[in-house]
Amino acid sequence: MEETSMETDTLLESESNGHTNDNMEDVADVNTEDRSCYQYPTLFMSKTLLELCNSSWTRAPKAKEDVQPYLRGCKWSPDGTCCLSVVNNDGVHITELPRDLYTESASPDRNIDILESVVHVKEAGLIYDFCWFPGMNSHFPETCCWLTTRQNAPIQMWDAFDGSLRCSYRGFNAADEMEPALCVTFTPEANSIIGGYKKFLRTFDVDRPGRDFSEHKIGSPAASLAVNSNLLAVGSWNTTIALYNVNDMGTYKSIGKMHGHTGGITHMKFTPDGLKLVSGARKDHRLLVWDIRYYRRPLNILSRVVDTNQRVYFDISPCGKYLVSGNTDGTLKVWDVDQVDWKSELDTTDIHCDKSTKFPLHNDCCNSVSIHPLRPILATGSGQYHCRDPIQLLDDENQTDGISLNGDINSSHMSDTSAIKDFNVSENKESSRIEEDISSSENCLVFWWIGDVPGID
Image (cartoon, rainbow, N blue to C red; front, side, top):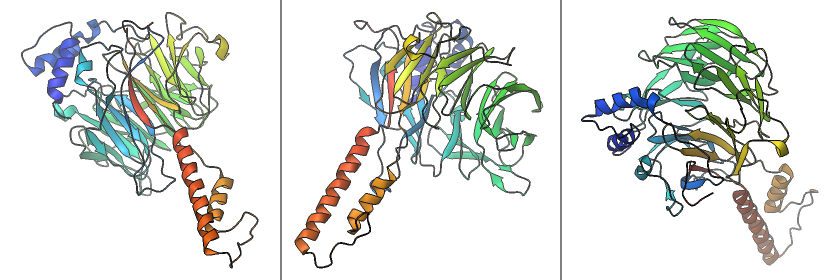
């Protein structure tokens, strides 16, 4: 992350109402103390989003054909200097926000930046979950880190400056076998790490990596976590959400369970005021809004498009006024509290009568969204796994081997010329099929300007 301290100085000074500081400590203090006084900009005033920059990833030349790199999640850093994204079969990437966007407003004639990853961690295996350190500030390198949990690996903490592995937090079962966490998050005070496992919630001390932890037994696997103050929401594959009260000693007291989804819980988030929880599930076209004071039934039901089992993220603006969600049809859906009170008024499930705003942004599944913590900028990610027709696969293999679908073998006395011709035909079919698959898929991270743009309605 080159020149990050200088760039963070510019960002923090511009967002502290013009207040100048003599040293970096004062800048950090102003950022934490005055953020509550900061007037968050109005978003989505225009019906058109302005593309600022993008980044994409392609399959390695020597990779197998079934290896498909696509974005599986993106999250802005707490200080807003960079974006962390997970790419399937390609590990974790950090992309920095261009310096001119720290203070300036976007214009329609601005050139689109092509961004390169400043940090790339090539993690093997499927990454289950990831999160930033809540107190991340680029002025203080020790705070610049993130957590990942992946297949057949412990919870790992990574350095955001050079991508090196700092430490690991290992959970062991009764047979003394290390098992991976399915989800992970920091506590709001950032002094503990909560890992969700198949049968336990395990709490690790940030300052004591290794295998020391306390655990709480749960009835169903923890697939998603959301924390707010002393409340912990645990979403499970069995479609339920469990609420816990977490005290300073790291013990959990069950509050109750919430029922309403038809699929396994994939993502949850508390509103900034801490009174409501929004949840989404796999193959469930609904976002459920819960009032944690009366959690027996959903307070509101919002409609979106989720046709697959993959996790489709949503996000809530820091001001609590906007709710945005990706859709598997490539669109972005936005709910504005001024147009429809998504916190308390039931939204219709009829798409034609929906009061939300829809933006067609991608040609493939829009599975990731993240709103910048300070600037009117939105990060979106696209992509999904594209399954091939098994009949087509068998047809391609048989044509390459010279065998037809009905099992007949081509005559052994065929001329060399016709054999070469048939091989060329099958090779051309294979090339055209690959090109067709590539044209129908998309894998990119895009930054959009969602604030006011002069000259655009």
